Image (cartoon, rainbow, N blue to C red; front, side, top):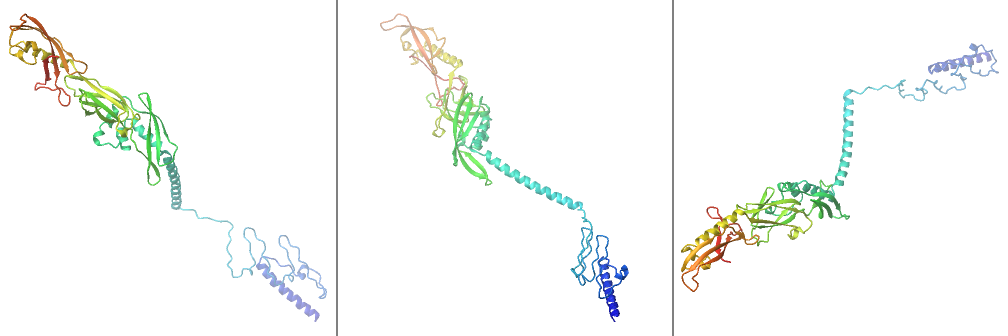
Length: 442
């Protein structure tokens, strides 16, 4: 009975072992051999001891089957990177398929181009942003009161009057802007040389900027009022120069009614008693040339430096005065001599001698002798700038009545005065000859 029981036990163990072996085989493990198969000596039931696991080649080891009965056998180690977990631990969970290496689908040419274009656009946006920021900083750094004044002075130094007027309006009516032109500045023998431009140290909306300049080697300074103006696009600073660098020049004319500077001509009062006429110029060295003086008047041009800073423009005072002086030429003197001779000859005729323009001594109807001993041979101007010429004549007379009946010479001075119109110009007759007032006397 005992033997039968032992055989049943052995059979059960073998069954269990076979079942375990089957499970082990499913998990990749080799079950240990049964004692009978291993050739171990038979032992009695009472002294049966579980046989130790047979030594296996590494890395697998066999453990007693009954020691871990009912416990899931862990999976055998697998080569990395994949590991197999116990089957019952993740029952019902799909086992991911593990591949030994990762593979990537290559990007298409169109995608590569799209990525490249996107990258280029992003880089361009960043670069443009940086350039814009730097440009804005640089623009505001250069848009200062002194930079505005220097730009204005550079235009004047280059003779660009029209651009300077557009930049800083002088606030004059159109009839006073005639000499603020490019042609006039182009005729200047010298223009501004800018040496230094310095702004004051204040930080308000009104700044004072002082410029040091030279004109024909003469150094001078001028201060500008510069005010803050409305920013461009809301962030670019602007400054406005309040005072144009213009100067009033007083021009007087004696026997000169018109003058020109460059291609611009203007009229003035040629009366010697006139106080002159004021004109406005940009700084420069200009030549004032008398024009339309006529056939009998000569006048020399005058070169005059015109610079700002010596007077206040707003008070209408002038920083320079130009005197254009005309003089009667030799042609007029000859016409005056001819007029003197004509009167002298008429005074030795009867009844021409009784003309009140003749010498008083010959104005008589009781002369037995009336002769011209010498007529004027020349005339001279009666003082610098005078309108009168004088000449000398000698008459021989003898009265036929009175106490002195002896013949004698009578010296007389003939005076020839040029007639002028209301503008101070020489009056001319229909033949274009000057008109004189001629008479003997003092």
